[in-house]
Length: 384
Image 1: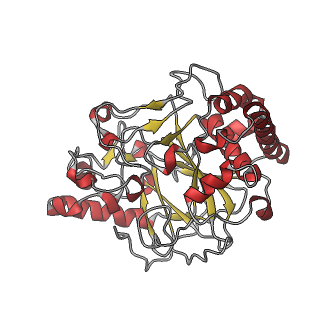
Image 2: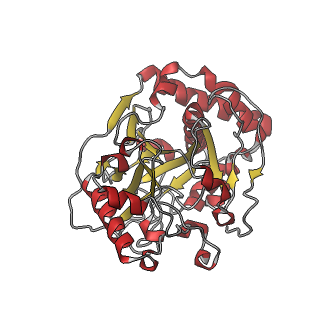
Image 3: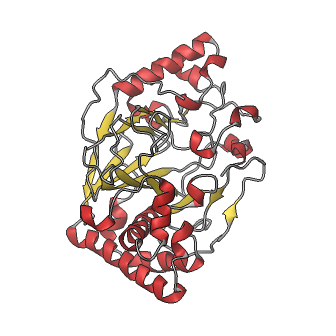
């Protein structure tokens, strides 16, 4: 689907909240990832742990050793603390040359990470992302997205330049809630930068900074339209039974406003004119308050997925091994509750991969694990 936001406006380069890891803390994360990688190589004897990053030995190592990291690491990756709903964490030590060329697709990135001849630093940075994510909460993946990997690779892919997905480049990636269609979507999204030579901007817009009338908020708080899964989960979802969802909701007024927003995958033409007008106003407001984060290598962007939507400005991909390369992790925050009504959604049958799921535990405490996929048993449709 096409981007629904205009490209005529200059995105506002305002600063979001910034946190800086002390040099020793950043080095400690890299060193622990190297140690875990070495341990896994010795115990497994092959690169099985890199396939989906859910091998029990890998999960055990992350859980057993994440508490060894300095306290500053956990403080740095706590949820964003300002109304922008986003935070940049800097000073993870890395160099552009240590990861090799940018892969031509996520599949190649996953394959290279799993092959002993090419895996070393890319696989180790996957472990870095898991250590950071586990310091914040419970990392998880999607069975129907990037082969169920817990750490996704975001790279431009030839032939996908104009679609609304992380593999695109030439089009504006519309601001959206990550996996807005699903009741088990992430609370916190983590994007780690390996390479970004053109300083391509990630856009962030917070619902807590928009201005809407009471009538508009009322319309948008009413379940009117469904949100469909994006193209990375396959197609044909419009033929499934879809549950109308509220775009906005709040337990305590505008200061606590949250949203589920993905206009590129919302059938807006099916709504009444007054709802479309309110939705258009929200879109314009999210554009007005948009800030950009042009991540540099070694920087991590945290996005509160209940408060802020994110996207990406257009850029020209070169496909020569030097393109932008990000790593992405979805994180569940066990202490955060959502609307009870979401429990009745089927999520279009999409299922999460949640090896760190342990009810009621703190992010860095050890608990009971579920090594297998956690199903949503109200759905039957699966996509690869």
